[in-house]
Amino acid sequence: MTIATEKLIDYECVDQVATIRLNRPEKLNAFSDELVLALVDALRRFDGDPNANVAVLAGNGRAFSSGADVNQRQLRTREELTLLGGPEGFGAKGADIFTRAVNWKPVISAVHGYAIGMAVGVAFSAELVVAEEGTQFQVTETPRGLSGVRYASLMRLRGIGSFALEATLTGSFFSAEQAFAAGLINRVAPRGAYLTTAFELARGIAQMPPLSVRAMVRAHRLAIEKAEREAAILTDPLKLHLTEDFAESARAFVEKRPKRPMQGR
Image (tube, rainbow, N blue to C red):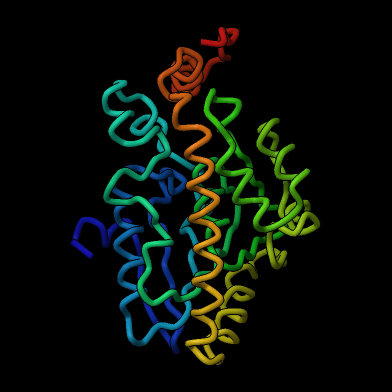
């Protein structure tokens, strides 16, 4: 990792378990372009780290992540949005952020506070998800004029399809407890114990035969890749990130005002 990206990500490895922490707490770990690339670098580092067999992905500060940095990633020109692949796209350098792995090592998301929008996609792309009790999740794409198809597909791979559809259609918050009941996450940890719980899971997996574990991880990520490819085929031609409704939603969010009525264009 470069000096610039190291400031945005904390990385360490102890006893075969790597810890990757989003480190932009003053912005609730909102995903700027720089943080996206820093996470890509950290996951590559983990994939190639001979001392690491499992990683725990978490966020410093009050939340896992508040999602895409709206000021930077959603107020772009139409040309910039097209090149990026939408306001929540990773761009060419950050595409297939998990599935580009070579060694197929498992990642456990340890979520607390909030995981909103883009952060839901990142957290649920990991093999296992631990969330602190009271954690709030929200898929914001539909209310902002975008498509929640990718998130619905990802959530269906993890849990109950009907819950995934409701969460993506309504954009309502749902709790760690609801996510656990729907099969979307693996553990609900007591307050202050989400990292401890994630590390317990990680240490157990680290003791398993590595090649067997990696075969499972590879199958999981190939399923994610297939689901995301199908979602892209369905939604990319719609160019929702170029609509007036999306532009108004982004401006209203940044200006902290109610959205004007949506126009369907």
